[in-house]
Amino acid sequence: MGIKKTISRSIILAGAAFAALIGWAEMATTQEFVFRGSRAKAPSVDQYMKQAGPQTKEVPHGTLKIDGQPVNCGTRPTVLNPTFDSWGGAFPGFLILNTAKIQGLSTQVKLYIYSHECGHQFIGASETKADLFAIRRGVKWGWLDAQGMEEICTFISKLKGDAVHPPGPKRCKTMRAYYRELVNGSQRASSGMKPSTLGPSN
Image 1 (tube, rainbow, N blue to C red):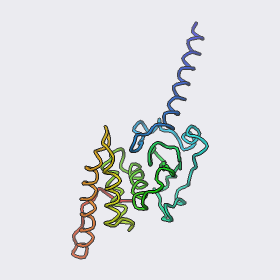
Image 2 (image 1 turned 180 degrees about the vertical axis):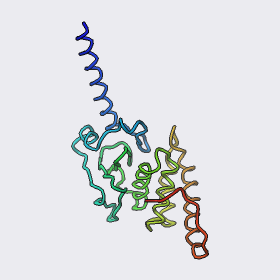
Image 3 (image 1 turned 90 degrees about the horizontal axis):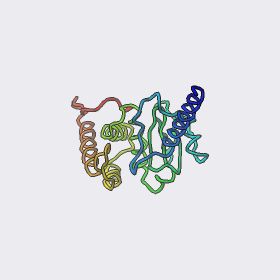
């Protein structure tokens, strides 16, 4: 009887583990998926790709280009998944980009999406901080200008809020204000004045 219980319990645990991996591969919201559980329970790149399917492709850090623009997120690779439910996602240690869903978006919006997901790697699950990380990186690295900021706002303002994402129009307002702060701060740099930031843009 004890042996049967042990075997049954093992089968249940194995099934739960498999279900969790399937959930990682498929889970996404209309906006993005960010893993919010324990890092120890997060899937590896290989685990994610195995469950997500053969359409996925890992791009090593330092080799990804978006519309010809080299991008990186420290030493983290990016998994390209054209069937992912959202534009992008983040797990501890790697990013996800839906290459099909971002087609048709402007280059600056694509770079914002990538940089937002990268931001989660450095600042955690906060959506607002990830937004500001992306804007700060865009200004610092020179790919974000006023037109791009408005393109990002047009893109994000269509999205509804949820339990973790503020409504799109609110995100636009926050990012636009921060963009202006950074740009004005750059213009004042010669006088020794510096803009406030959330930390390095990496």
